Length: 190
Image 1: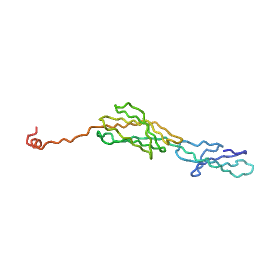
Image 2: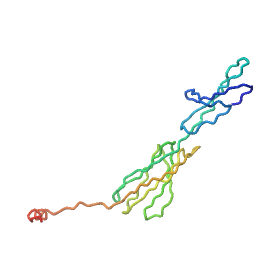
Image 3: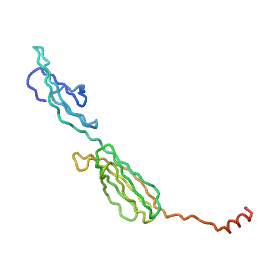
Image 4: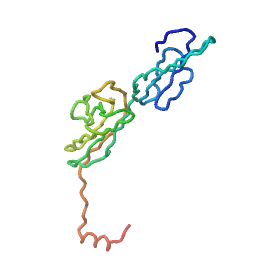
């Protein structure tokens, strides 16, 4: 805030709510970055001298200052699926603004592990199909998330979460022929 004169007092406020900011009585003010959300600030300058009076002057608003949260992410899906079935792994972002970009590694013993990315197209979740053509264990390692992708600022966080999907063979029900069941009932059990 630039004001001319002597014996001036400053008091900063935040909107919404016209909340007085305790201790913010200097001619300049640095907004805190600890609270997520959109806030605007303004200052009221008044004469603090003892020689007469002067009306207070209110500055124009600072404009909206938006503090973005540090994004978080989770990975979910079935931990066991049948071979040649349909399955997926879902990445979900929170505490940020979409779109979210998830960085992950797939380790399946067939293809060498490689850092890959996938971006939400709407909302905060995106699903990835699980290849179920081979019997194996597939480890999906979520290693990072970015929010507000494609805009400024993009907020980034490291995440370390793993989901193991076990692809198993389809099980067949055993059927015992009727003659075997009858024979089992006739023979004494030991």
